[in-house]
Image 1: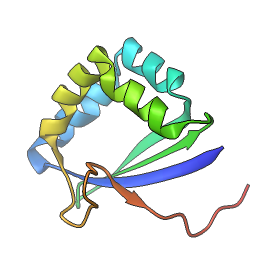
Image 2 (image 1 turned 90 degrees about the vertical axis):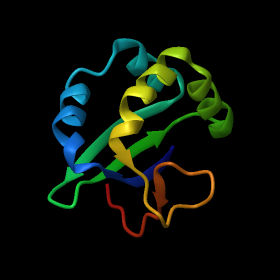
Image 3 (image 1 turned 120 degrees about the vertical axis):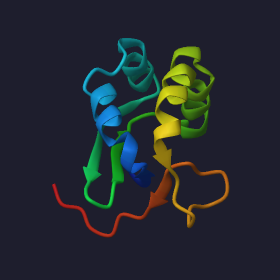
Image 4 (image 1 turned 180 degrees about the vertical axis):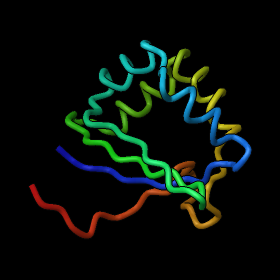
Length: 109
């Protein structure tokens, strides 16, 4: 298992809508997350800065293939088309990233 964390901005005018849609994530999106070997997935919101922090554990063996399968899923693509206009990627993210990856510096069980 590998742990992943990432950060992303959220447009101030979209906070209420983002929270609302995530209170009822579409069942097929949740199914795809599970099928892509993601477990213990959480998104946290830090206000008033409107920063989103995501955390998940990957339990598969081919991360690139599982993420590609998720990205190719039509329902997930539709979900992203709802969520992405509300988001504001960090200027300091790496090329190709939407959510900026962050490094784990401490963990305890």
